[in-house]
Length: 217
Image 1 (spheres, one colour):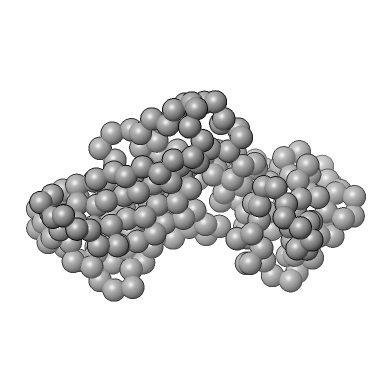
Image 2 (cartoon, rainbow, N blue to C red; image 1 turned 120 degrees about the horizontal axis):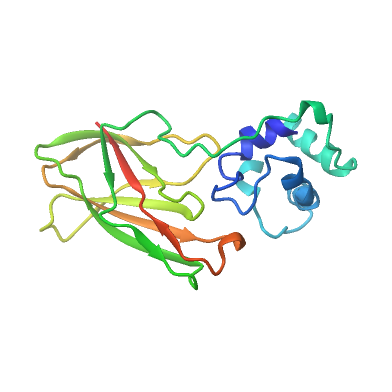
C-alpha cells in the first residue's frame, strides 16, 4: 500500500503538503481507509473529496491494492519493514530555472481567512527580450498554495495581459511546458494569481507565503 500512496498521493498528502492529511505513515493513513474505499468505489461523495485526481491515474492493480487493504481489516504489515520517514521535497521539479522571480513581498493570510485568491504583479527584470519555453511555481508555503494562473504583460504601461500558464500541485510535478514559444520583451511583467486555501490543520492560524516563479528560456 505504501508505494501506491507515496507515488500517487505523496506529493500533496504529506506532512506540510497541500493535502488535508498525510497518507505516508500507517497512523496517518488508516483513519481514512473507509473514506478512501467509498470514494474509489464511487459509492458516494466522501468528505473531503481528496482522491479524485489520483483516482483517475490509478492502475487496476493499484486500485485493487488500496481496496483490498481498506476492506480487509486495514493491516499495518510487518513493523520491521516500516518505510523510512518521507519529508516534503519543495524543490524545482526539473532543476534550477534560468530565472527565479519571487513575489515582491510576503503575503500574509490572516488567521480568520480560509480561502482567498490574490493577484501579484511580478517584474521579470529582463533587460532584453527572451524566448520562454516553460514556467513553474515554487510555493513558499506548500500547505496553502492550491493553484496558480500566470499571465504576461509586455510592460508596466500595458493595460492588457495574455494568459501564459496554469500551475497545480501534482503527483509528479513538472514545469508547465508552453504549447508554443513565448516572447518576453525587456521589462515584461507577470501577473500571478494564487489561490490560497487552508485545511482544517491551519484554521485560526495566520499564514505567510512568498512563492517564486521559475522561467525556463
